[in-house]
Length: 221
Image (cartoon, rainbow, N blue to C red; front, side, top):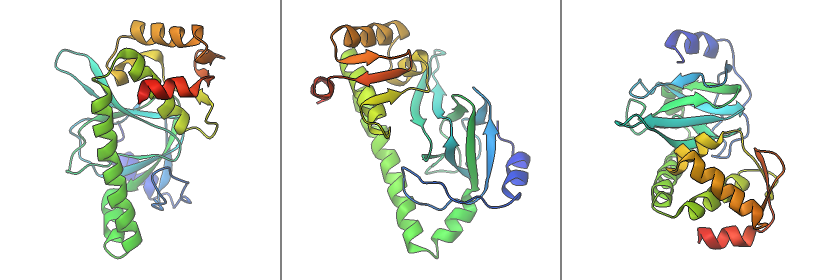
């Protein structure tokens, strides 16, 4: 967990030049904090005092269900901003998937700047809207078939990669299963089926080449 003392001392260590963001140039200022694999960044129901931006590595947000299952709500890659909440507490927990470096910015400071900078206020609004759209799209995906869910996931990850035909997956198959609401066996079986049909090629267990993108797109339509 990122404690308030740790965040405060790190942020006061000095400004860091803003990194490019898939969510828009918010110009977050702070200092990078490193998190080891599976280390918690913040927990569910903790005060939402900071905004976060992935510099390197990857982050997952998740909730634990009453029956003990884990439900991953989102994956964040370099440039992505996370920790955006409508209220004062986090609705989910965040963990580093692998060794990650995360820029931490005081939420109140960003909001104070937004009161005087219309462009920043607009970017914050768009970021919030995109997060809402992401949640809605993810909810709709969970009612689809296993093949449709996995196809949509691969296309989503390809769209977030600079090389649109190759997917680099920092997350495990279990992570993917918990994101798609499937079992790890179903995810592995579906990926193997796509590979045998020539739709994808498994260069490694986490590096996938999309050989027949139209076929995946049809499944995701």
